[in-house]
Image (cartoon, rainbow, N blue to C red; front, side, top):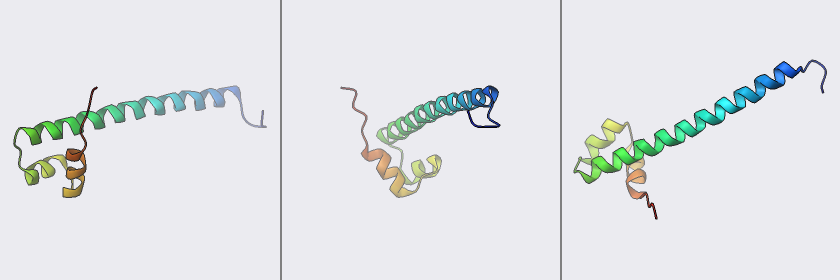
Length: 73
């Protein structure tokens, strides 16, 4: 072990690493739900301009989301 590094500090690193991983999973899931909601609103007839504004997306970002399709099989 390096001088100055304690077992407690290594445990803190492990805990923070696990927390970060957990938050990354949550962000990925939130992104997927967001994109699904955007696609659903589009399928229901939301105007692209209004949808982009509601979602906080530029036209190009909106088109990228709408172009991706989720295939479960």
